[in-house]
Amino acid sequence: MNHEPAVIAAVGVHVLDTHVLRVESIPDSSDGALVDTIRMSPAGTAGGTGIVLSRLGAEVHSIGAIGEDPIAATLTSLLAEHGVDTTRLVRKPDVQTSASVIPVRPNGDRPAWHCVGANGVLTLDDIDLSSVPGLTHVHLGGPEFLGGPAAGELLAAAQAAGYSTSVDILAPGDPDMLAWIEDCLPHADYLLPNDEQVLGFTGATDLEAGARELVARGAKCVAVTQGAKGALVVTADEAFTVPAYDVEVVDTTGCGDAFSAGFLRGRGLGLDLRGSAELGCATAAQLVSGIGTDAGDYDLASVQEFAANTPTR
Figure 1 (tube, rainbow, N blue to C red):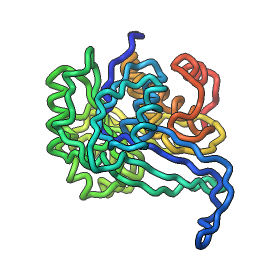
Figure 2: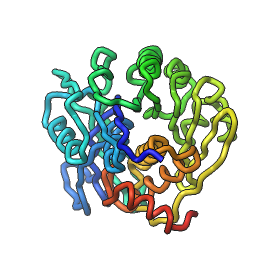
Figure 3: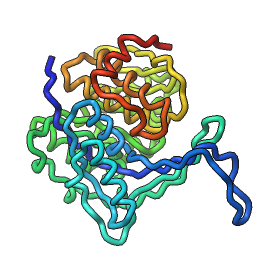
């Protein structure tokens, strides 16, 4: 098994999340209210996945768009604290850095306010994969922001250069969204959606059938997160489920990104699809007892030890 660090370009959506814990209601008029915690963390289908990959021992280079504002300074600082190279994040004038505010209710519900910001103006001209030394894998988070033809062009070039590829979609599942991004599917070695996206994209009522349709549209492997049910992995040749680990859940923000990171790290280490999905579920379990995508104190060895000693649901 290869234990050398993978070199991964995390391309696309980078967001600064602000979590506000124990929001019971929005105060009337200009009144105030006390909450338990206000905490910022780097997030997004590229940024969040990138910091978890870095924690698991990969060498990660962020590629995306940010603004020229204090949010950008905070986001890049937090990414760098986790060992992510941020030198390829392009600063865009006259647009703010993407950000979300997530009020977490006492029952765990977590609605969100989100500003697309600079993620909406990322173009292929901002992305130079050849500038990343030793690159082995390209993870595209949010192909919908580039658009399917551009995302397909990027991933086709990545595969032609010998890199493996993965895609994670931020938008909710919808047939029109699938049509918008479909050009990238034939160039995705791994498609990493959640269960609601798969059903929404395809109109299927059975998750495996929906995942098989995405494989038929070109994705080589579809690894679907199912929350407390774990993950479903489907290729043209096989389909299997991997259960989630039995842990107490505080906040599920970023768990999909963490699964993606663990799954991709497993593939980089030479694990088979099942072993990679198990590592993905074990990585996601590290986040749910804390707040945000950077929650928890773990590395690859501790996640592997956790997986070996923790019961599944």
